[in-house]
Length: 335
Image (cartoon, rainbow, N blue to C red):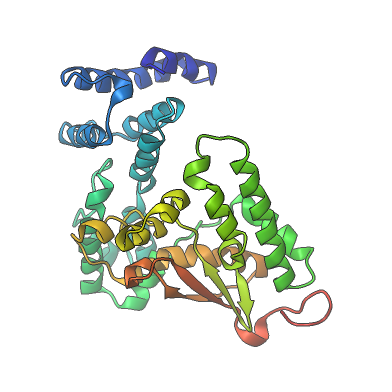
């Protein structure tokens, strides 16, 4: 893969010529920066890419496209290591702004603007290793002005009316199940089949996301695939971000790192540059319970049982079904 081939690929995908040429300029800029250091564009090391992103920030070239084009290029070039890193860099776009927007719903525009004007958002393209420091400072600012219950509500990950297509599939499965337990088992089996299919499709991502050892492990762990109900509570263990690396590492710190799916805190387990409050986990907890709220068509409460921030090597949540309000199953027996 080289920049010229990438241009042809973009044109074949229907990208307008002006945009495709802009993408090519982004790659040419990287190529020129690397040439001064005697490095071909496809031989770049992760440390060099980190330096280049810092260069983009310093020279005010850290646009959305500058990161997304590089991510797409190295995906096509087969550089899994760089593509995963660039995915992490691009995933946190606008997160802080969205949290403050949610905060405004509870405290009003004037109070929310006080946080906005502090300019706590990391520059786009910031190295994920530096994100925990921004997170700690952001949370500190929130705690100075607002009670914890308001902060938790603001951190809640909401789709604001946009329901992922997968939720519709899950709801159809739930509605055709005799009980919540039957649904959870069926959902787990479907995901297991999908994972094994991805593994044996011979994708270059297989060893990273679907190694055979991990599939054998997770196939016996319904709580990780879908969830397990105990009385009025569903327990869900979150899958590691990078299962292949999670299963291989013997390091306790790296197990926590690969277990956590939030880019704003992960690096803190390795570099110890920041201490993040467990309240930040509200982002993952709310995302986990959202599916069940959609299935049951009512709000639910949830809490952290285990998580990497608290020193665990997996993240586990409890979604409470509120006892007597659990709808009856199709046989007349409550879930």
